[in-house]
Length: 104
Image (cartoon, rainbow, N blue to C red; front, side, top):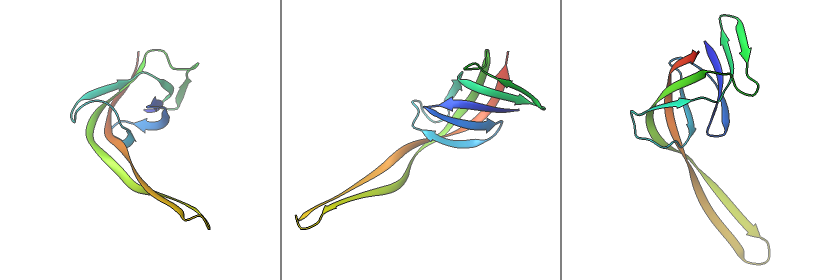
């Protein structure tokens, strides 16, 4: 069973036992989370598309860890003015594992 689900403002194609990184979610490691914004469900060739979401469809997942992404450096310079700035940023991510996809 495959589903397209919206998590933290982004859409992901997920299936059971898949591990994905999403934007930071509230909760501790080991907590269960569920997502009800399921946009599409495919089960053995039978496709159900939501308008805008599939009624009664829920994706359940478990939080595995909270991690930081790679550092992104932002360098700005204006020539002949002596202006230079260097800033860094590391995005917060949450690793989750999809436990089940159910449609009622």
